[in-house]
Image 1 (cartoon, rainbow, N blue to C red):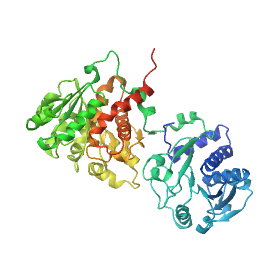
Image 2: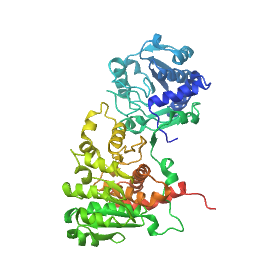
Image 3: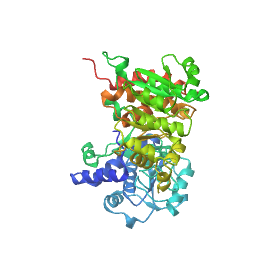
Image 4: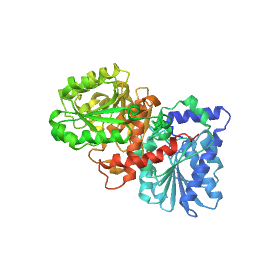
Length: 504
């Protein structure tokens, strides 16, 4: 159940189910029953107010109200809108509710112990204004638990954006599959725990819907994860090259190298300027260090095809020298991960970078945070009418020809073919210097060893982003970047138990 359905895709899933013979009212009854159960679990034996809108989300609310009243709850329904606007299944659910329906007013929420938010669903795509906004603000001000139907009202289901104002739910009940807005910020912050319930939509409809957005996790990439093999050896597990910066900026490259090694690469070498050779060598044990100065020497170094993945950017410096090294690496057969200074060096003039990426067949992964993204994809980002991180990452991947890992607490990985993953497991401890350098190395480590497993750039970047979050959560408060690689073995033990085939 890792598919994320945009509102239009969810509507298609509903339509296909109804066309196959399941009445829409049956789906609505099942949805309302699930909301009622969640309300009972949250606030047994208390007064419930259902705030219903004029669409199908409101219909779910009317069903929940009826079922709660049948169980002895004191239930009040507030309709935001005119009853005459209710149509189809929502009208039928309204007609089945035998209790009073109050006109919407913020003060009508005064006497309640729990609120069911059935005002707007995931399809909201316009700013909330007027009375609906006043009701959302009153729900938040009431200070009682809130059960949101499908998505907290005011959240855009496709982007996670707050459309002027949005309900802060205690928990959310959604149907069939989650929506991108459940994972993307700020939407995720409004949802509370999200329960995904079966309302009678068969999984077979996904073959027609063909979703391309996924919640990031082992279900997405586990089948291609490069598990260690009894007959394997260090050379079969790939060789990562991390290009270091000068004497005063070696730390970032060393973090990336350690990340690549802990991610499972068989060998990792730091390509170091001669001025920094001693400090890089002194700070590395299992990581090898070799003298490599500038683009020409890097080109020669990468002619050894066993060196099959390369990281550039962490602490590498911004400017012409970095641009030359990047273009040199892209001219090799190695998979390439570009981070930090490697991205900023092409700000304002990205086309030479994109042309070099499009001219090759080996994987390229770009790993910008928001500042680097806005600099590299300046025109693209400026032209977005809706500031959707998911849409921005997809457009960037299509424009560049690379896999784009758009970092943040809701990291999005997008491939040029339109696939995208959204992560929701990153703890706040990851907001520390150097954590992105470790991530770049982890991606390269997976790419280096994953080629024979069919692990593409999209899968490697998604897997590394998930592992990065799990490692941070495993370590906990006080995390610094050096701790991330050392937390990976414990994460791997758990992961391998999930994705490894059973013993013969």
